[in-house]
Length: 131
Image 1 (cartoon, rainbow, N blue to C red):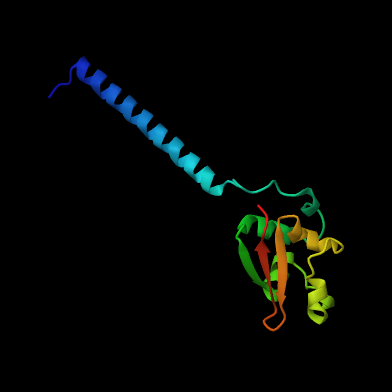
Image 2: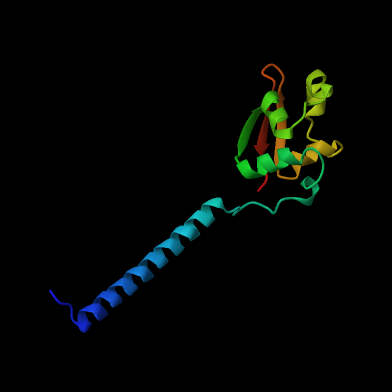
């Protein structure tokens, strides 16, 4: 079987059309992935969270962006990369108070979260009230 020049043109046009369709589908897929990974509805990462040793907690909360996040003391220490201070264990209600007087509290307050400690189970619930 011998192909004519016209057959090659048809094949070329068909391949060209298929490549355009694939490119369009890839573009749509990339847009969808970008939307899934985007931070739509979130504020920009707050400046007050950008420094300090509690930044890792801010980043964790920002990346999670759940309405309610429960984190054990052990996981908090893993996230932070250091042990919580003794006051977190000895006077937890004071330590986890939602006040900007505690510089570390800004790591969750600036993102719209409030912390509530569960002393018995040694975990903290961060609940987002803003945004």
